[in-house]
Image (cartoon, rainbow, N blue to C red; front, side, top):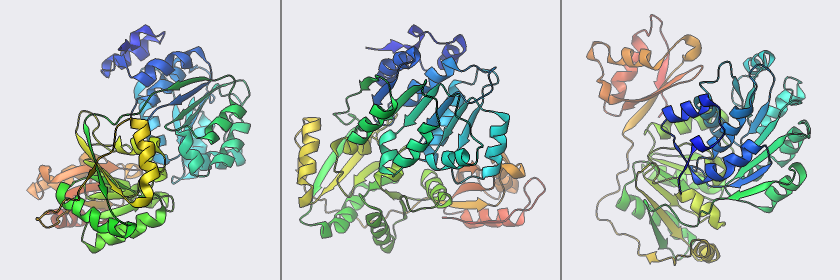
Length: 458
C-alpha cells in the first residue's frame, strides 16, 4: 500500500521540496521508519542499498533542526567517503528550502585545515567517516556535546572494515540523551552488541529482501574447481558483453589477481578495495562512472555506498558467504526501471552458500551450462579520462572545460562525456577516437585565459 509523505507531520517547506522533487509516496523503509524517527525513538532499520533509507533519517533530522542554534545537532557516520558525499548531497537537496541550514562533510582524503575552519563557523549537521571524525575529536576541533541525533549508516560494513573501536570512541563523546539510529543491510551479532550498548529500547524495522528485483535476470554457472573460474569469466564476458560491469571477489588478493588476468586479455579493469589510498579510489570511481573503464573488480566492503547508475551486470566471481549479502550485491543492477543481469560462478566449495541463498529466496537454483561464444572477446572502453590540474579552487567549471574543448570545432560536444570538477582537478571523459586531439587542445589552449597542465588518466 502506498503511503504519501503528506500524511506525516513534516514542515511545510519539507513537503513542498518533496513535491518539487516528485517524491509523493514513501518507499517501504521510509513508511515504516520515518514515523518512528519523527517520534524521537531509537531505531534499528534493516534494508538494502537503494531502498530510500537516507530520506528516512534525513527528513527526521531536518524536521527537528533549530537553525538559530548554530551548533552541531546531528551526526551521521558512514563507512566510506563516497557514501558520506552522497548523504550530504541528499540532505542538502531535501533541506534546500530551510534557510541558513548548514551541512558539513568530514572525511579523509581532503585537507584538514578547511574542515577545521568550517567547524569554527558552526554546522548543524555533520556527515563523516570514523577516521577523520576521530582526528577532529583528538584535536578538539569537533564538539559533539550537544547532538540530538546520531546515525550509523551502513553500520554492518563499518564493523567489517574494522571501525568498531573508533565507533566506540566517537559515541563515548556524545551525550547520553540523544536519538540513535542504526541503518544496516545485514544484521550480524556485532550490530546487536552496538545496539545493546548505545541504544535505549530501540524499535526494529526490517524490510524483507528475499527476492531479487524482477528486472534482474540471474544465472548460475558451475565450475569443477576454483582454477576454472578465470576462463569461465572470459566466456561470460564474451557472451554478455557488459559495457559496465561490477565483479565481486571475497578478498583483496583475489581482486588484484583477477584484474591482472583481465589486463593480460586486454580488458579495461581496475580493482577497488581497502588498500587503495583515497586519491586512487576517487580516480578509479571516476573512470568507472564515465565509462573509460569497463569492469570494476571489488570487495563488498569497498563497494558499499557506491552510487553506480546504469550498471549492466553484476558478476559474482566469488559467491558471497552470507545470503543477504548476495541479494545486496545483485541489487546494484536493474535499478531505476533498467534491466540488469547477475552472473554467478559457482565452485564446489560454494554449495553451503547456495543452500543459504535458496533458503532466503525460497527459489531453487538452476545451473546453466557455460556459454561457448563463437565471437571473439572484445570489451574495450569507449571513453578515455583526461585530468586537468585545476578545479573549483582555480574557478574552473564544467562549462569552461566544455567550451575550451569545443572551441573552433576542435572536438564535437557529443564526443565529450562526464566532466567532474573537484577542488583541485577536473576529470573529463572524451571518446577514444578523439582523446588525443582533446588532450592537445587542453595542453596548448588556455581555459578562462589561464594555462593548465593536462594528461591522460585512463
